[in-house]
Length: 388
View 1 (spheres, rainbow, N blue to C red):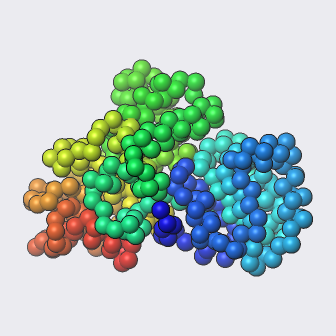
View 2: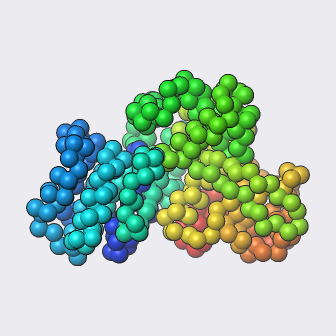
View 3: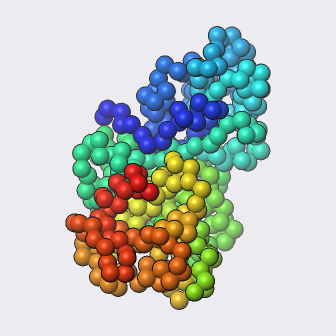
């Protein structure tokens, strides 16, 4: 598969300072560097290379000596360090080089866990942080129009779109994650228990977190479940969606939701085939897909508004809220009826929202008499990246 240009613009940030680029495994960080930075990369250290890693683990100062031997133009040259979580101590060396030579680095990683755990120097504001997530639909359109069913089958990890057996790829991805990110980092000795946790986390992706109920289901402590969700966040395989709490008309809940980072991984962890559009799993996967599109748009554009959801104590809900301006409900129906608009009507009574949108599978956009915009999901995603 030819390289597909990504929505994330690292060059703008690198023009100002170094960048710490995090992202789950297989989201395309290596391809991104090769194709987006090109000739500006003066040198690269790949810490997945066992020889390079062993040398720098034994003597982090060796990196300093190697950099000092280079003829670097600080205006044009970029130094790349791949998978920094393998040798976090190198960040101290990077900090020193930035101070002395004003050199710019692009530092990548697939986990923030070790960086946080070891309390390493995170460059003290001398680098901005960015995250590369799986494909978004606007990127994927380079391969031609894709159906929701194919998106549910493959997910949005780039290699899945170049694989003849996407289920096998996703299964390998999940098992590699358990081996590399969990076992190797010593997060837990109970890998079977963690595997059960992952399956339930997938089945409950998009639901409010309830550590106690899950702990009872798995036979683990509530604290273990909370810690394992933190592992998913630290390894960039999911994110929490906080509740919108500014409601005046109705009392809202204060429990966060959690979404896994890829709809294909979510499906395989749930141990289901691609569902038909009459099954409840279809709507659940559709919401997970839209959640990650919003997450990527929010992160890539460095939006200041908080991405939330809204739910009242009596169960009225809106799936996504952007700041205090945009409310978005997601339904997989082709012909949404009035009952699908209840949450958007109720949140409209707060008088702060400029846009209320229902994302669904209708063929054409339309506006209701109440000012609710109903959009086909493809049109919504196009507007999200071009006009929001």
